[in-house]
Length: 615
Image (cartoon, rainbow, N blue to C red; front, side, top):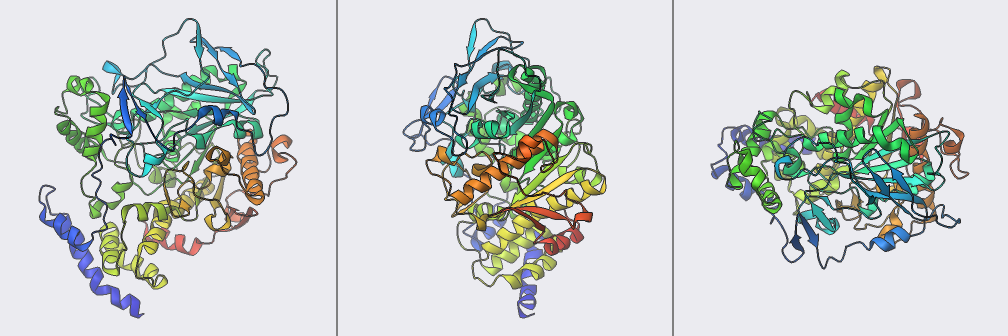
């Protein structure tokens, strides 16, 4: 009780500051200075547009030079699988006649690979800030044996260690991985399910060709055709400068790019042995956010059958039109254009766009809109394509409920976020101020719930748990329960950090210490070997079982009742994964060593958040 009584004066101070903050103009620096004096640990998003010593500009692309984390693609492509290395001679690279022209792929040790297939015309020049348009057919043979440039992004800040080797505005490409068992000479009697990966990266970074997402193991192990997609990022994909699409940028182009890729697959994936009627879309973080949006968008309805979202930040709100336009005006001013002068904006060089993008999001983080620090650029509610917040849509049933979903989080999602923002210890006073700024009238109840459990003088641990519970775990649980109540099929999981010995490696973009946002990805893609270390035998077993379950979901919706070839993956029978429904006691799969279903360990906490009704 002493702890709870002690916070009341601090709560009062925080509440006063929170409400006072709403009356301050953005151009007034006094309040910002007050906040600076309270916390020197609040991160200032004022990073340089590029690290000049690490980048050079050639044509349309930035290229990393002298980067110790650059990837030797020959080594990556020739690497042997830890799970099921192919013992047969590697065949010649296949050729596929698509509707646009002939593609030449390559054969690796576990899969046929087609890199850098164009699914839309380059969004450059007058096509910048326009919806994607169809690819122009080509003559001759298109070389799809090596990755193309990733979409434009800055190699600075926390993602600089894993920045793509090449970035370009010309980036609307996808990669396809096909099991070696597919014979391109004859059509398959039974086409394979298709899994489409949408990468994360806060909608400002990431790449389909990131070594972490090497799709050979997953394709080979699960007998699926795996596809990974590039889409426009940052201002290139989400700038909103006006309301008229003929004379301004109207945003959400990155989501339209994903739709164009899914449409291309409907028209072409059968040529690669895939079944266009059995497409599963899956993604992590911003990729999971994209997946959730496609489940809400009616024009995406016929482009996929089911979905997986991993570490979906449900409680990070999409921008309103007002906020998106405000950011667009700041961007245009920094680029020495006006928001209504589309010709001026389209004439900017790619590096000028990138520089203005970073500067527009580089002001001091406003603690009264603290969650925006996690997503400066991204989709917004335009009223047509996207009509409401994802968390609202799922709770109200405004999504494609006939589609099975698999969703989950990692056990310590918030650690990397909080420690990335607050680089210095957070005192109890600062903790109260920040909590009050975010949750306002609910802050006292939240502080009463969490403060007694955290006695360490550095309260970042407590803030990290609040972020984990409020942004990721609890709204995901509520969405899954809403799905179950509406008769939908849903399966839920938690990937447990504490139960694995996975060493931190630079294939993951967002880590703090030994905790990573996206920690399950090296297991799911079985891509640890790309980072030059091997999984332990128990970790390998966990990776194989995750691959088996994801593959079974792609084959037959139910992760443990799919076809025999996936239920008994490589001779391993995976654990039973019950549907998430009240009749089973709301069981979730705990991916630990060994994986097992269990009741939610933080259900009492999520009950608390559900009753607050703030997500």
